[in-house]
Length: 238
Image (cartoon, rainbow, N blue to C red):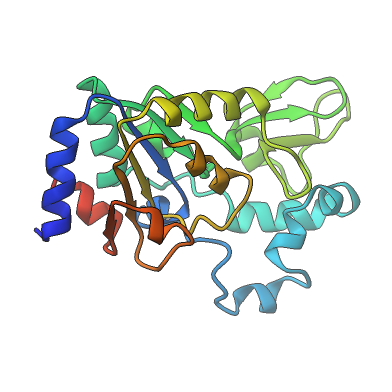
């Protein structure tokens, strides 16, 4: 165990209001790739960038192409919670962790047993008809060939926040409240480059900001502790 991880373990033991803020790096260790990483596959299969496809305007103009990408790259129903997800749920049950704030849409924190999960960018597990508002689970979208349609004829849209769409204000308020109250804020698996989500870190009033990420972030200079290691490996030692 590194000295940084030893320090984190001590701070976890001493803290009573821990908040975790996580991004794509939390789920990559469960086999869910970060769609922003360029592996050449997108250029071979898609005529547009992932950021373009996952925009509101693209969804409205080309739903068939959107759902082709969505099925291929955004839904991983066989993914399982990893050591990070499990430890966070354990810390919540122990009364130490008060909230998980996530940029991920995969639902793995809930699958691990976490209860207070604030999904900044929504989730693949909720979907709704754009015409009548009827709700649908993930299975309906998975089974659909191409664009999923409601019984009323409307398109079923995943409850994920696309580019050009705003974040849920109530979720943002709860996230800010938790971050302000935290005595230990652990940020992991995110480069903190996607706004407005990344800007939430600025509401932290404590002195113990921990960043766990293999690559540098814009907030490294503000962290009390930097751990450039795999997040699952770090949490498995806590």
